[in-house]
Length: 169
Image (cartoon, rainbow, N blue to C red; front, side, top):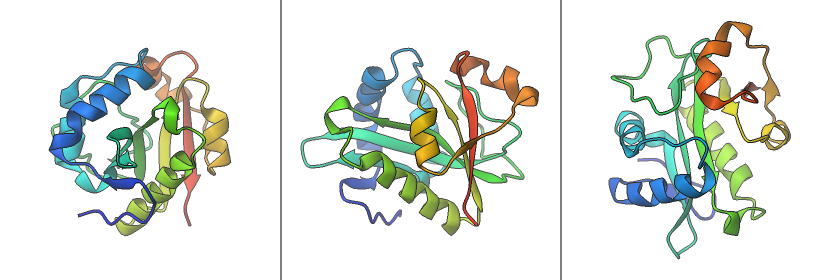
């Protein structure tokens, strides 16, 4: 089971999935994903799934898993298995309700994801930034990647989607 060292963050459980969907509906109305996607990620890689809960119910979540940098996963897609030859730890989603933004929970989640990545032998993390969130991710140590080869795979994320990478070594 995941060890969390950041206040408010704890491992997600199947009982949290309705709360995850509720947070996603508020935070990402333009990027809906079916509940089955969250079930899928929790089943395939529970170590990368965490919830932000300060005692009043789920206020946010982090979903991350091993991936291949050259094939960022499209939104709203379940995987039959984690990819062979994974070369990075991928942050699928970090979502926080407006009530807890500015609390440091986002940066704490990135730190947790980096700890998970290191525990699983990855020396880099990747993500696709949406909703003009690139500045937040840059402050967390990520940098944009030129992604002409992966542009089609990013289509489900919208025109402003930005593939980003953070080296951990």
